[in-house]
Image 1 (tube, rainbow, N blue to C red):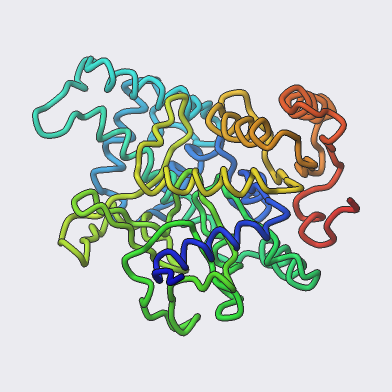
Image 2: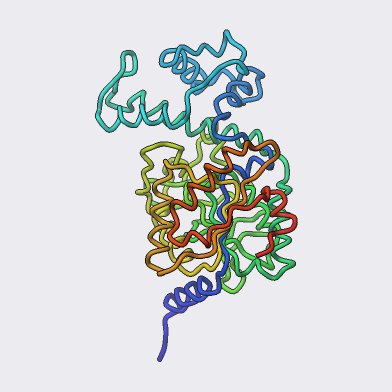
Length: 374
């Protein structure tokens, strides 16, 4: 029997999924270990950078709009107050209000809809760029603990049996894995337009070889992905958080010339996962999780609002017929006991086989350096 090359590649991909034993979820706490601000500090960090003149083009329209918006909606005048003393609303609160307005096609005074682009929609986009700008500025150094983790797994000969699922937009784990090229290839689970893009530090980027591939599935998008909504294509910018520059330097698709936009699913109660590439990544994650023996949750508190993640996990648990061994790594110095107890309760409440849920005392840094005894 003769198989087409396309069929053979699909077969190889499924074969690569079959070898996966461990899945490592990377939440915000994992990025925080490298200096990324937690979600609740993003607004403070942005306006601190703005007031210190550390954001390019300080007088740009995005800064003007956001300063005006926070004053009009929440009575927060960042130009007249110390940022450290301001109590900002959460991302979920702000985006929830904006997205309800968009969905209901209702306006606020001075924030009405226009035929070209509603101002509310513009503010929503500005908030997404705010995330990208802050992470770009705060994560300019080389990832330390993510590299330690990757190298430990390689030394233990477990790297090829591990899939990383990241809930973060930063490229800390991406950069740690890409340093192992060409011995290992990063497979994001989707096709990019520019697999042959020349990159000095890694010689060049190429289509992942299934025999060398390490899956990195980024469920909420990434700062190194540029999406063209005109020709429905995705461009990778390895080692570079190009999304953070889009607001100041528009990028255009090499395929059709259309303007590129980010794929970033922001923290909101109304997460929309309709993007073609994200849907493909979520399906790949489901396949991987169904086969996994162990899942390590790193820096992830399992909040009640993450219904999409919980749906994914419950589908795989029920369809598999059993609960994998679950390990929670989310400790840090000074963490209150009540927070630990609440987290452990949320995890054990959710999974079917409670005895397989192990709430550890390990921090992400300790897990990266030494792993855990399982």
